[in-house]
Length: 162
Image 1 (cartoon, helix red, strand yellow):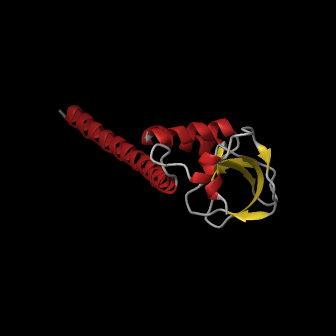
Image 2 (cartoon, rainbow, N blue to C red):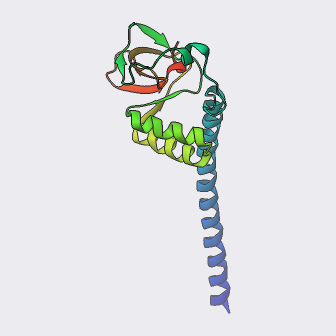
Image 3 (cartoon, one colour):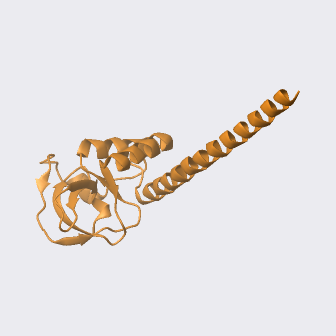
């Protein structure tokens, strides 16, 4: 009888410890995804949906003569305009994440941007952070920036830079 009681007590302790470990990992993951969800809400608040945005008269009257990226006309130090902008080393990766935002697929965006941040493919920018404008993609609304003293160039939205 003592053996059965000891086994039950030991099993209960193991179950309790496993539950505590699982809960702490679960809450850590929840905190991480809550931060990513907050970043997603801020990004989507700053970025108008392409389906609801109407082009300005200046955009509709000018003919599209060049679609490839060209070097920026003016160089110099700029600043990040808001608190929730991000940039990616690879333009295709940035456009992939942007696609999730336009599709309003929150889970895909949060998962992909989290992996991209972890892998160093993308970075968040701080509001007011200084950057140099390196390149522009005229008709896509994207620019390439680099941080002072750094050589990595990050693609981001043109409206992220002022």
